[in-house]
Each structure stands twice: as structure tokens, then as C-alpha cells.
Length: 205
Length: 139
Image (tube, rainbow over the protein chains, first blue to last red):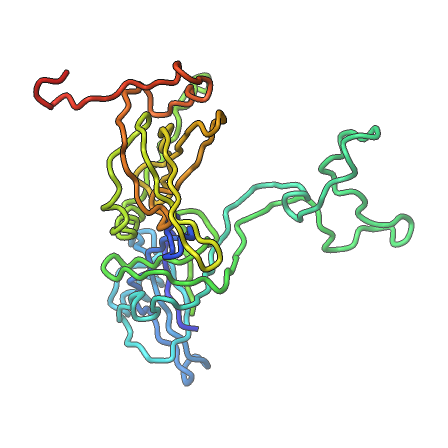
């Protein structure tokens, strides 16, 4: 799928002509550099590897330094492969306007905000045990039973419990591009996308 | 920082790129918004859509606050006394449904949010008129 790497800048809102207020996300998308072109003959599949975000050279490993040098570019923080219909030269620059148009439906892939160790109510939408009355106490947000007794005499794998939540790869589909601002490389999409401000996000058509 | 000191509130600054986008939206609407602030008496013309019919309703009262100023989400609250009952309406300032805002009277108040007006009625709720100091012969 054709796509580009971007950085979430922040959220704001805008009004439609009929007076509806739309929440929207501002993303700085590109300009990305083609760091590698994968071909069917050499790699077994066709893809274009894009790089985005500056990185210090002394923080880049030597093999990766060579990889970027081959594309005649500076080290990049984020490298992702996308499938494009058209072909690109190694070292070419791709901007948001090359890939998307206003009104396109796209999907955004990002890393959600970390929530730390969370209980089952927040993590798995459990409703807690019972009510607050009838002598119930200290069980309000408890998971309840996690299995039967002497058979199977164990807790099944995958039983939903408390634990680390967030920092997952999350895809949001059917986001509409409200506006493209090619001069500042900005994409404004309707709705929210996963992750904190300044985090990387992949936009795909 | 010492833990016993109260941490100062985090200053939330809008990203300049977000600001840039906001300035590019609703440019036409922005031009027609007059300057007003809490304490001013204004008349708001609101577009009401009923089915496929559309009419203009007016709401006149005192501005008691403006929230999130200079953003796309800015709203203002207008309060009036209707049949002896206090009525407040919140309007999004950039909404296309807010047809027109007329400033009827400028009020002189000391704070940005005059919620104390809710506790007052009749004579006590009067607001002094704010005069332009630069005008000749007026103080």
C-alpha cells in the first residue's frame, strides 16, 4: 500500500459548512527519502523503503550509516517499507502531496500511549464485581472468577487479567483527509490517531 | 525540584504548525467578529435549521466568559434574564451557525469571567458602561 511516514503534531477542530464541529489531527508527513528500492529479482518482492526524521550520525550504527550513504542521505530515525504502484529512484524525496489528495480515505498506524500496569476494568472493559451495596466491599474493580475448580485445576492461557497496557501498534482506518498544506508538509485528517504528540505515525492509502 | 514545593502548572503552548492551520480555517468568519469581552452586552444572530427551513434567532444578553480564546474551539457564554429566569447560552465563535454578533453596550468589569452575575439579580446585576479613554473630553 502506498504510504508515507509522519509525525503527529497535535489536535484541533474545524467547522464544516453546515455548522458541524470536526475534531482533526495535524500531522507533519514527510518529506521522506527513498532509502532502498526492493525488487522482485533481488528481494523476492517489490517495495520502497522510506526514511523520515533526522538522527545523529554518532547514534547510528556503522552498517546503517552505510545504508544511508548508499541513498546519499543523512541518517533517519524511522524506516518503513511501502508498496507503490509507481517506481522510485534511490534517494528520491517523497512528499505528502505525491501520495495523497484531499478527501482521500486513509489509515493511520501508530503506537498508542503507554498506560502502565492497569486493572481489568480499564484494560479489558470488565464491569467489576457486583454493586457497592449488599455488604459488598473491596471488590468493585476486581476481575471475578478466572476459571473453574478441580477441573481443569489451572487457569487457561490467554485469560484476561491486569497488566501492562498501551504502547501497542494500533491501526485506525477510514480517516478522511480534510486538507493538505504542501508548503509545510502538513496533512489534516478528521478524527484522532493513536499515540502522543511528536510520535511517528504511518499513513497508508 | 523539591517535592514539598507545589509544582507550577504546566504551560500548554499550541504548536505553531497547529496554529498555522487554525489561522487558515474560517478566515471569512473571523473577519466579521467584533471585539467584545466579558461584561459587554451583545446580540447574537443564530441560524436555526428546522427540517429544510432556516431562520434567524436573536439572543441578547451579557457576555460572562470567553473560553479557549484565539483557538478554533473558542466559545463564549451569553447570559440574559428571560421571564425572570436566568438563561445562559454557549456559542462556538467560529460556527457558521452564528450569523452575526452585534455589540450593544461595552461593560466595565474587573475580571475575565463574571460568574458572580449568577448570584445577582435586579439592581445589583447592573454593569457600568466602559468608555473609550482615548476619546476627547471623556474620562
